[in-house]
Image (cartoon, rainbow, N blue to C red; front, top):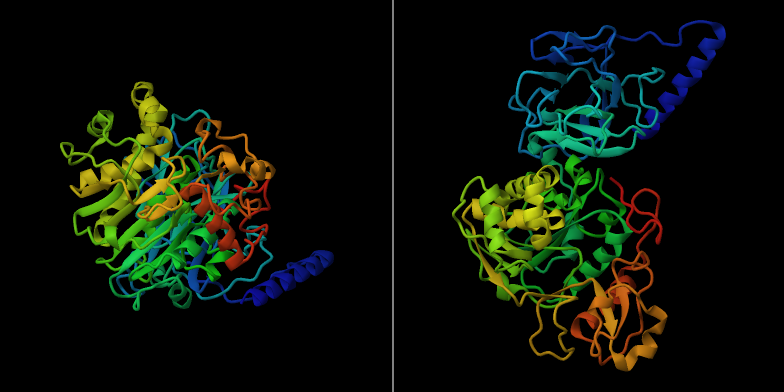
Length: 579
């Protein structure tokens, strides 16, 4: 199909050039399209009609693409200027993921509503844009309103928040199975808004100046992403469809996450898990190249992730649960880890302890601090008298509980972040002691559980962080996983450590296991310079197995591919990721 579209486009451009040379129209005669049902509509009911419509195929989904041409300004509510920036529609992976059938129950249109003076999608001062199913005709190119890169029509909507608006002064909301993809002033893709996200506030950052609106007549939640054959390679359970333990983590496509994916996957394969599977949850507008080798569920980026990256974790988990095809079984036990959590032993000891409304997690750094309960009282919306169980990853929880936790987790994370941004007293009260600016999503998970009265058992033996107390390499009962970050050589191997000596992390040095730091994931060469070989004795348990698993993982799977689409070459491109 792509080759045919390109051929049609080239032919259209050839005709245009020939027609211009002869001073005549370049458009060939064809049947007019049935233009039924694309309008822009304001709250008072007035509307203008779209004069260009096209249907095309993208990623196996029927996508309705529309372009609005403003011959005359629409009648807008008082104080609202007419749209001036352009939005181009393009194919995408998945929108709401809600279980819908392409039948009479399937919504016949997708509506984008822009609220001009409300951050919570309330009031009557808004403009609506509607796309509907129109025609199966694939329009030929040659129109100035066609996006050269995608071949899709452009749509104009109001610009994002400007410097004179109170922040946030606008918001947007999608109704229906489609989505709007958002772009900045340089036409770089930023994020996607779908129905399940509810109201999306628009802030000065990230700046939104254009986008692409689309509708589908096929249920995106029924499109499977996780390749079952690839999943089988990363599973010890005999039947993925039946309840079992699912080990999942959230990541992006960058080089920073690439080598962690290799190590995380290798650690799973060598940790003798009981009745379990392993899955990567990817925040990206498309499935990346590693998805062919590692089981992956991908969903487009939330707009808010540009303000706070850790929001990706609850956001992608919520979208995963909305997938009719790839969502977990309600009776699954979910173990949410981080990409730098490397498994060392079977998790059955911990997964066997959870049940509905009874979860488990590793003690957080703020466990036992009364200020956490005070913070909960200030932001709570339900369960305000419930005790907050202060845990961090790994979270071990039943899938049916996590499905309810995820949207509240996301909501509380955003609420905390915006209070930090807008309320100086709130920031002064909690930031220094609790580090809520970065750890908002950790508190948000705890608060979502309190909101739902889900009790979480606090344990201290499930993982060891790199900066926790050093564990001897021959410890007979080590934790189930490492939460890696740094690695050290002991004093007796200081000479061997010199080629990899780091100056970062001096506060963690001592005269025992940690005499010389040789690795940090914060270093932009971490994916390519991994100390090896390492001494077989003298290192602490965390350092030795961190370096061993990274080395062996890359040896097992091969080097992480470097390309311009999904990740850039380190060190300069270490953190770069495809949106």
